[in-house]
Image (cartoon, rainbow, N blue to C red; front, side, top):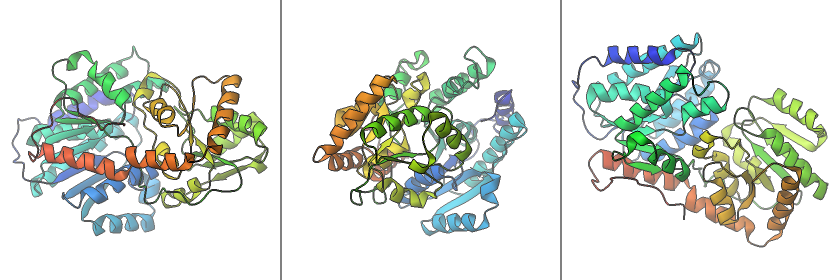
Amino acid sequence: MHESGSFNNHRTILDLIVSSETHIKVGGLAVIYISYDGMLEPLGQSQVVAYLEQLARDWPVYLISFEKERDRKDDKRMAAMHARLQAVGIAWTPLAYHKAPSAAATAYDIAVGAATALSILIRHKVRIVHARSYVSAMIALGVKRASGAKFLFDMRGLWADERVDAGLWVKEGALYKAGKAMERRFLETADHVVTLTHASAREIDRFPYLQGRMPPITVIPCCADLDRFRPNGASASFTLGYVGAVGLGHMFEEALTFYRAVRLRRTDARFLIVNRNEHDTILAALDRAGIESDRVDLVTSEHRDVPGLVQAMTAAVALYKPQYSAVARSPTKLAEYLGCGVPCVGNAQVGDMEEIIAGERVGVVLRDFSAAAHAAAADRLLALLDEPGTRQRCVATARRLFSLDVGVEAYRQIYDSLAGRDETAHGLRTVQLT
């Protein structure tokens, strides 16, 4: 979402759209899924399309997404995504994502999204509006008020707190207060809530305004398609891996520090970095860390090619700033690493990562970032890699906790409950970690 006054604009537009009480008749068993992330982005493909392809077997799905200009201009990839979604019966409406001017752009996107969703709802039998994160929830909230459709708030994380932790907002500022007010509105209005971690579910359960009125909540971590992310034999060489962004919230320089600690113990170790758009930032960080470029493989990859790259890794890194908002972080890369039999180096105070990595013995956990901690973690990782059965344990853990099938089944049960097929879901509902 964009900054500076955007919430006031959003509310004004929503009030215009839904100026009267419920007046649109809601039909049957269909879902409108709204994502402010684009389907041509890796996140959209792994965390939206992969789920919906399976859910569409049982539910008619109308997908609304907001595509970046660069992706919309890629006619070949847009046509391929249309064909992919159409093949499984998903009706896709790709809207244009607008970035500037900031507040007006997001307000415009919300208005167009709400009008589009209402048009779909009027023309088709739609029972549920599934909103992925906060901007989508603003659209869905207007649709719920106008139609009485069930509102599934798939919150993903504590968005306003993420903005504070990233240094974009201040906690005492008007934007943060407005963001938390919208979050409260979503949580109080939602017919069901999905969050990514048990840690965040416990945190939400402590919100004062939800005492005695907690909505049904389900924990669904970021899952992976484990038919694609699966082992493919162990490499004879040692490769430490890193997949994804290196910017806000990530601790890429600590990942480089850990690689140096590994290099002291395994002089043959290489570092494989898979990243889409931040190569200049990465090269500058490598230079500051004194890591020779000939020991690093920096690659850009389409999402379809990521499994082969992860399979080439011996171990991999997923380090994040241990901030308040990190309580809701569930890295997709953790599921992808483990699915390929690759142990993960993570850190404490990030969602459920410590509980999973340490509890399942599928990697090592950094509890601080001192040189001694890095050295000890490198020793523990090398010892873990020498243990028989480590790769098999990683795969088994991924299949139990992060299989796409597990996530899809959880969403299917929520849809059934919201449609009245299952009236047993009340109170705090979670997908158990063990």
